[in-house]
Amino acid sequence: MSKGMNPVRTCIATHKRFDDAHLLRMVIDPNDHHRILADPGRGLPGRGAWITPELSALEKALQRRAFARAFKTSRKLDAGHVRTYLEARAASPTRECKEDRH
Image (cartoon, rainbow, N blue to C red; front, side):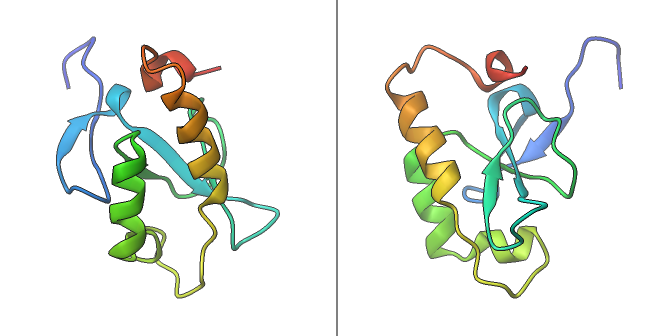
């Protein structure tokens, strides 16, 4: 990969590929294995999954049960934290995911 290029990731909802700066990384909470956390800073441990940072993409991922596939689990997963993050982000839509990094 050339210097200055970001990795390309696939959205679990839309299956479209984007530069990772335009997607939100999510992980399973290491303290509660049924909860999915938004990880805009990309510093949380564990297998990551990527989604277009829009509520419509979250809804599509939930309908398709994309989280269980992406995280390779049969558990029922709670995406409430991701929903809360996306709702707050929608209130200030000028921010990109890469700007959310800590």
